[in-house]
Image (cartoon, rainbow, N blue to C red; front, side):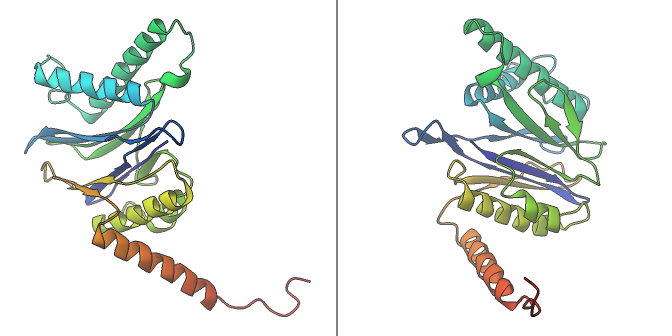
Length: 246
């Protein structure tokens, strides 16, 4: 399984994906699930995925091949982020249909993947899309500023409580780090390293990003402080009145 999340904010964007794949306790591996595309000063995109690793890698490879071969239509030439999301969706459906044909199957089943695409093209606002296995997509709004893929339930509460469209980018990044910590703590199928990318709106830069592993000092500091704060706050909560429980 996996956990990916992306947040579109007033001043920037935050992307994060774990790297664990799990095909049983004897087949746990590390694979990148977050890729960055773009042209410095002209466009910036991040593509994340969850689902069938074979499908996801085939989509990444096809998109990169089109860029390398300077195909007429590729992620570096599309006019809008929506066009890019449509391109990813179409590529995914082509890959899935080919896999089903090879397997002589009529069901999507094990071939399905989902994607998130976020970024900005010069002269346009930043956008974030969630792309479903069917190939269609929806766009993040000010009311719904973040999307998740994979094992989302453990890390969603902290994002719901602490992140809004107006949240500071670095504050949102800390919340997302804790969202991943909660998920990793509760689900063995999600694991480190975690790939993080922070983007400042209108910069049109291609950030280096950061890969966070178990030895990351800052990540370990905030996860321990958060855990201690939760325990301390629970102790400090008001005691229930006499007779409250009947």
